[in-house]
Image (cartoon, rainbow, N blue to C red; front, side, top):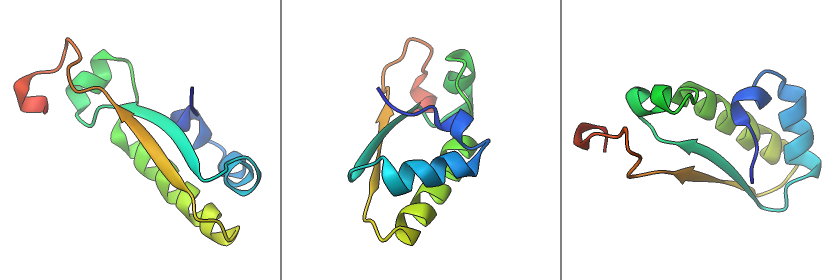
Length: 86
């Protein structure tokens, strides 16, 4: 389970609400990989969405006076991943 950060970045108010009232220290999200090739084959957004979500989440957590962290989930051996992607 986790948050669809790629959708959440479309409405920063959602991220603010989440960071302020609905996270108890840690939030799981699943970028799954960092390289564009595997991400596109997995039909996942690029790392730009993750970076933007992290920036907003960190900002709103700090504004709320909370020390909170993201826990990203990565797949290291997905079938479409090449050695160069690691």
